[in-house]
Image 1 (cartoon, chains in turn brown, yellow):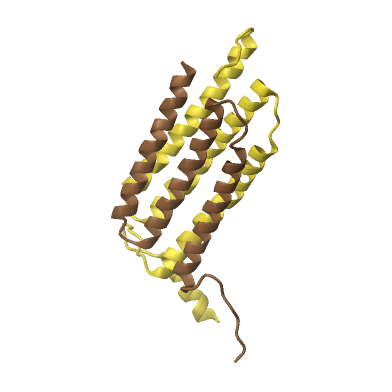
Image 2: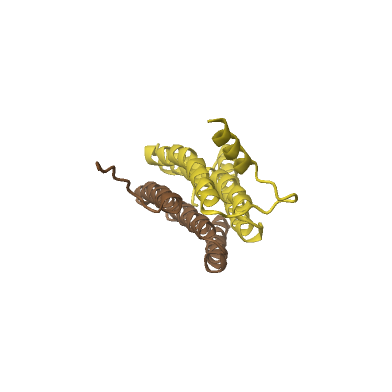
Length: 94
Length: 127
């Protein structure tokens, strides 16, 4: 019963990733695509949490932490690229 | 899941864990639908940051409770992940909205009014 519920939750995460993929393909501007990529990261992270409950293991918890950090850093890098055109700013003396 | 059900308190703990996981799944699925349904970037950010933060906090708290009850592990990594997501998700939403405004995405409003642009012009004229 509860196993069936967890597998249903995993299927719903797959559907959510597909819906976000539609927004990545259709999105009219670049920030829409960045938002949808962030959404895919969130879906993967919660899917890993459900899998670790399903298999009764603690081996995947590092993956949750690292995936959260990578999603945040990629979103920040994309938004800095959108805002300034460069990601890492260097100050030059002229 | 696979907890042995012996007393009524085990049933209540199982029920709390399953409710947290299902509520988190519902919020994440609805935020992913909201990304497709809203009209522009600034309203899509409402769905993408707020609902997904709530859903992911619910799922991670459910997994933490499950690991604590079934295997008696207090996992600091899950607590750290919850804290980190609560800190970073609003920051990334703010950065995306400011970058979208600077990249020139127009908001879809009823009266075509852009309060942030008016504030920028007011600040520039006051300097």
